[in-house]
Length: 125
Image 1 (tube, rainbow, N blue to C red):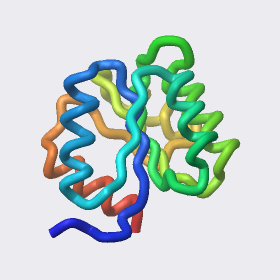
Image 2: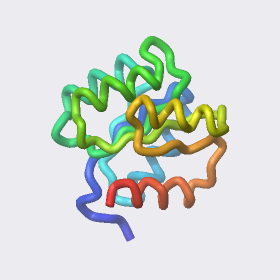
Image 3: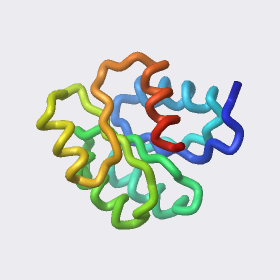
Image 4: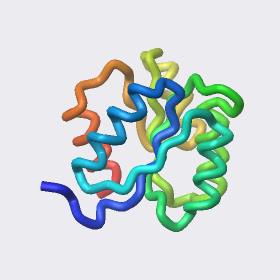
């Protein structure tokens, strides 16, 4: 059952198929989803929809503005936004880098959709 009032999510991912798949999964859970294909577009959407976006999900390896910089800038724009970094790179060092930049959590790719959705819902609670 969709979580009514789940709020807005911004997905910043340069891999179009993955971005659309993630958006569909989140929309099925009741989230309003915005999508961006690079860091600049993501930052623009964050500024335009500041009051709506509760959660930013960003890949780390993005064109233009990278994911780590986007996390830092998003945190400066909205200290209460929840942020999750994603990457095909994994390991303790990557996780620590994402948290140090200001993210709340990290999801390594590839991921199981059900596990990712559960983690995102827990972050928003």
